[in-house]
Length: 476
Image (tube, rainbow, N blue to C red; front, side):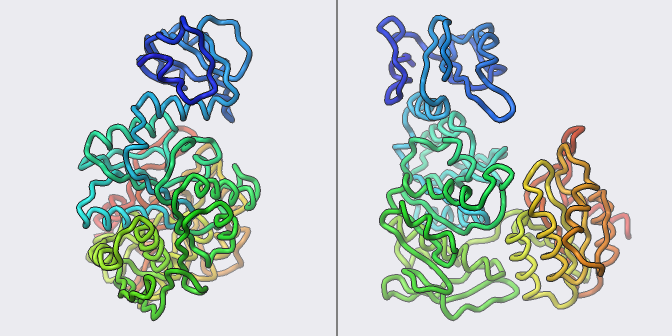
């Protein structure tokens, strides 16, 4: 693609000689530069891309873009490298984001489940959908592992192009606060933006809940329509920039309000009115928070123009998501559940959901990730102890931190009582399975869909489904 077409609608200023330069790719990592590429120097938190300009040139970059004053030939100065990367990537990948309807879901909890629910509603109507989120990326029938909730803008627009070429009419994607704050989704017009909730998480990055909320609220200034949970206290922040809003709730007056809620062991049911048209919504995922996820999906689909009848049909046939209240098949007289809960609110929700159908004790096993918000650790310890019959504190993804230090911070929020600390997660799972009795429910919280553990020495394979199977085999 010619450079003049790559930099269209950006603040990059180029002369006539540069306009016809042929650009073969866009890169922001100098290690991935190949001959003919345009390299964008971005100032990150751990390193500054401007330091690697010489390396990019050695690797064959034909154009360099950055925020500093430089003297290299074919160097272009812009005001904001991240915004330039997003806009240029959109151009380079044929503006496919504008050729599909994009649904963005933001919030602390519920994004993944809500995204799958909306995808299933749309597909029941015969629409082809792409999906981008924490669990995986789906391009047609092809599944791709997801490295982060929302990819960097260059990879994001490449995905949009692949999805469009695969025939996708819609893309349903999780939109993280990091991606909004760091302009990964800059320049995208969302058909509808959905807000689930806001609870403590990522304060290592945002520092305060107000900053966290403001980051999330950026989505609604970029969306044609909005679906917002007005039961959440931060909904007022989201509503400030929202347009054509559909509100939903359990507690307050709203456009879609869940009434006559029935919580069951195998799912939920409730009645909701769509502008006077009442529908019975059923979902095969248990727990009060599943009502909110179903409402979020219903509200988002309604904002897209999907009929209440088709929304009801889509939710009835929808099934759970890997790593979200996932029951591990065992022949034991107790139940083992895997869930991704890794925030105070997420942990509280899953334990309460299990408490609603457990016939025996609720045994909760969890840890907290390293190099992340450490203020939530004692809070999660307190929640786990208050809501569970027994707690096993263990390791999650410690990253560069010492697991014992993380566990000590969790236990700081707990009182003397029914809990134990076991550093090695495999050993902790084996202990939980030995400890469980008939009718008990064992919750393995924090890892969910993940099949690895991250330590300072590196990443190892760790799939809790396999670990449970191996532990039970050894036990027998």
